[in-house]
Length: 293
Image (cartoon, rainbow, N blue to C red; front, top):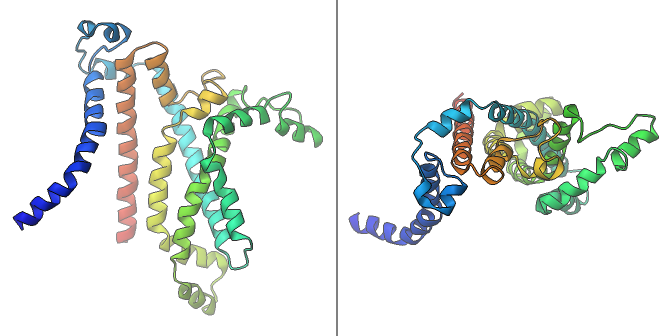
């Protein structure tokens, strides 16, 4: 047994070394620097670096802008995650339907936004939703609706970004759901039809329970990804209007690379990590309880 254990560690050692050097050390270094007043002066001369303890974290919890960015991010997650998952599941069910035609074509078309460059597509969406020249407002004008300032109105800016993010990412979840749907035995649906179950009853009592583990995985991936909102507001709104689209990562970016408060920026990163860890842990525990029931 000892020889087998030693052989296992020998084969795993190269991968563990790579993970330790390129992941473990940077994370530990960032954690250590988040406990200091690391800034532009410390970059120029490490002698200016001073230990701050939990000062950065306490200061952040007393910063209104941090709480505003956290609220904006939570708004994005609460609306965007259910919308993304529901649309992904609906598209997967349509592609998995026996009557569906040209499945490969539609699968490729729906997945295409996932592999497109986010920044380039965000620029296109910014022009699509332009107040005066955008195609969306032009279409609304054709039916007698006044133009909407999609990216300049605090009420519409974040919903517009949510719509873009859902369109950009739902194809990834769709592929996962499609694989899960194809793994459900067809005999279950045939037995349910013989017993007189409607399509809605089949969805509630067969599709959703059988997709439980897949839904959990997709939910955790989507939630953790949506909490890391940055590129969309950075390209489309720069955090405006009235800071209604400033996310936690955008706030971290400004702290680190606009004001050069790198210690505070690293503290933001670890606070966000703790939030994501807490939310995903709750989701996993809830999912395990559902499986036990």
